Length: 305
Image 1 (cartoon, rainbow, N blue to C red):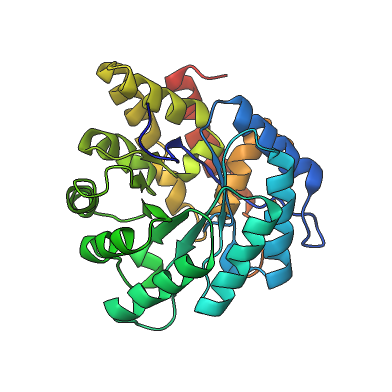
Image 2: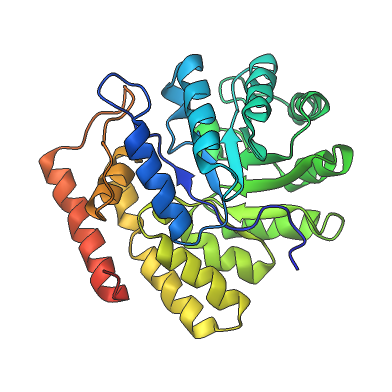
């Protein structure tokens, strides 16, 4: 029996857009159907890979509404609602609730350098005003500000609807400290790796799953890792982990990686458009070939067709 409400493999789904910058409903539906069929445990829309930071307010709501309705309860849906202001975050979170999301994922404000007290009050006010499960999102490489284990524990104890965190951090030591600080007092608090290569580490340390980009185009491998670990097949889990880590060079092909992820999804045979939100630009032919090279090597190594 799972202690946590959210667990396992939850891909941070790209926003599939048409040439006019609106939802490509057919392509988005194709991707959603493919991911659900692969056995993932939930879907996260409007994360970093979903290009939320470059989107208009209206487009964010369009993505949230279409995605939630299209999933139609087949798996849990998380919507990213983080913004630089508390009021806007509450508004987007209430919209997510209105359209039927199962929870929201909220990155900390990423312009002002806030004190921990400011961050506590920001999240506490959101939790008081939004009757949905909230997963915190820690991505200090981009926000330039870390959510410390002590702050996260304080928030989890103060607000019962703050139920987890996505740890997109370079150091597995930070994740260990998060687990050791929070889990003894809040065992049902879900802790996810944000970087794919930390997935096995997180499970071994007592965490709950992965919200990593490779699950969009190689979901079979992340699902295999999670199931093998839970069944005690650690050799198989290690092999899946090695296959996942072989894909990490993909993230270096382009600094804004969402165009890389979309290209990889398309190469897997899923019919989507690869349009992106400016200032991100489409990949050059040279970079597309690099994506193809790494993906083909993985598929051969893992015997996926």
